[in-house]
Figure 1 (cartoon, rainbow, N blue to C red):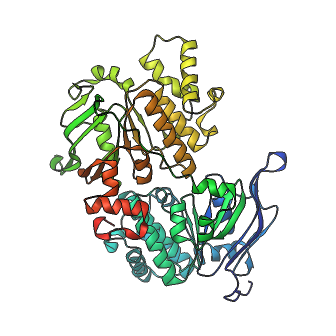
Figure 2 (cartoon, rainbow, N blue to C red):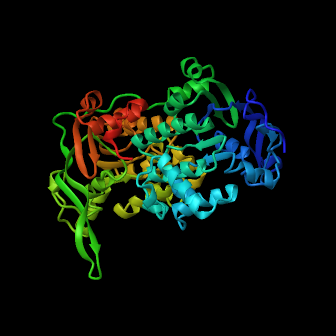
Length: 548
């Protein structure tokens, strides 16, 4: 084993690293000639859009790529003076989870659903530190408390599905810190989290880094996070680092066009403001969606989960109402109640007609006019259907008399309207990027010429530049067709660019409601201030206003 380097040398040195998948003419050059280092106690951010090579570079450091399909035609990776490319199993076992910890993007898929939290964290310490069960349990409780997980002792026997997204991410952080690593790799650690939880997780990571003197490699496409956390930035695109330097320098004086494109990618513009006399498309008053809690042999109702508890909303033609709040606040349940996809109490008026009491057969003709675009386009689009079949499915149901040629023309026109080449309609969803798949999902909704559209987190899984494109597209479609939008999101920057009215929800109830400019410029409630602070200024979060 190589002798550790002195404190003046970088902990990680990557020089001219290349990564190929496959061989010969069919090889994909995922990473090309990448060079950078990470100092001791330093945070370096690897920034770029999906497919730029960020995660592949990080996984190369731990030698976790699928060999032999992946190879390193050139380059070296030295960790504390030791070359890890082609390192032995013993060497890599010592480094992985021991000297280097990693936090993955989606904790639900990274944690074993069949094992308790205690077993999953304890397993790491058993492999690297050979701790007995009692000592390991004490250490696990200490770690869970350190990462801010409430009621740590009680959580030991919990399974991942019994925790919220923020709680699962805290467990992942505890696992990555279990063996006091010298380097922490954080791969998009906050992408799937609410803004307030994002702020708490980032603050936690900074505090833990300062306490432990760790180095950190932060992989992200969110430049707002980078600005507040990283010491240095490396900007990647198409497998290459096109610019690197001190964070302040990169943000204030970017040199490369791609860096400037990323910095300018935040959703911009102003919402389309509905006319004062615009007709009301969708309205509800005092809506309630309560789910019964049943216990005992006879399954008696002992209480209710009040997912939506007395919410009123009115959406007019050409109007966007933004619904914001943390996970579990009732945003999506409210939308499903309006669409009559979830049972609810209270009137639901569509174009002045109360549709609450209509049965399935009576409601079906209205389905074409009330559409929804989901958060994850990959999960929402059938992998067995071509794009043309996906977009045209609604036409087959709602306009069965339409001829095949005319239907094909309508599908082509819908794809063109959302910025896609109609010539690609025979391809399948996996052949498209995330942003293109979301455009397909939007085309599927718009092809039926709806009047009311629910947009359920339609940009949260997308890169910043793609988010901005989708927001511009939605605004253009609304302006062209006078659409009424209910826009659900935890990203307040996107909401500010699209919504002219905002509803802030928490635990099923409305905390604050009003014009978007009034809510953003002068929020009245502490919870609203906490959400806005988390989205626009991480340091300003009011800890008492949000739960951990």
